[in-house]
Length: 404
Image (tube, rainbow, N blue to C red; front, side):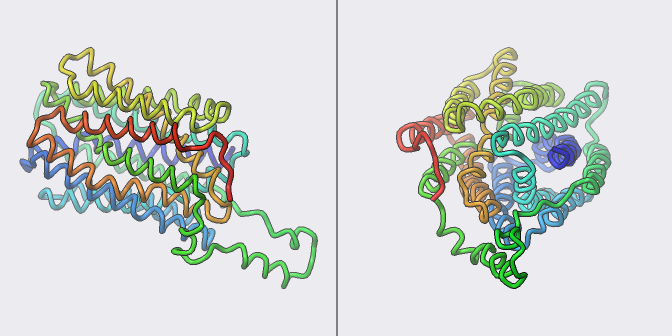
């Protein structure tokens, strides 16, 4: 539990830092650099896709060398440098470079961190562990957004975006300091080693436990995991970047301060519910929570398609927080438990990479649909794909999953 707690603190401070600037980026791009919806979609899509594409290789390196703490630290350090890149950016190209740097770091750190969480938890509490980590993560994000909101609410002049970028470096540095308290986890020693047999034989067994080359590791995927990765791809194709939620609210007449408040509501709800949802998935099964989660997302996106009033937007951001709590930590627990032990990092990374492959066209498509057919169409499209993903899980996914 010690590792899970401090890994949670690392994510708490990192997300506090990130969310102090994340909701401001699309506003910064539009007001300072005159970026269009399509350009914002391209920037978000490229950055997010890069992060997810890196996760599978990061996961493989984690399995191969078992340096989970070091790999995770390097990824969080890249996120720290990202804030300085924002400070010195002078065009949308600079913002794109900064976002790529940030997502590069996220792509490196996520898989080893998730393996650390998984290996630090009991099997029967896996959902609870991931839920706890997600709750602390989202709580930090909520605090970061609250800080931005309070500063903007009491501000009388134009937004000085760079001041927020500078301020965000402080919690990012605190997150890096928390690594001092994280302990590296190790896989169980080979059976021969436990029985005190000759070291040469133990070393041979340990060598056998090393994952196969990357491309061979991917070929070992369980059939049910393959199906779930297809479901993730379809769902993510309609799940464009959260910046479109911000832009939808702004398009409906919300000012910058109110948009930040809506984003705060979303993060707070997700933070409060992530751990209970993870615990619930331990009791009723991952699939039985993922399907309602996808349906909740579909209802949320349909609401965003037609929302115009303040009460409706508040309700929808609450609903989006509920969906996030139902899906994010549970997905990782799900992939972790149906993956071969020696390939856990690779498969956790592959899950994110599949999502990344879909995320670039998802964000670009959302920007194109918005520009050519109106602000409602990207959300209707996303709701439809989410219902399709839920249907595939119901019809084809077995009730009880085993690893081949």
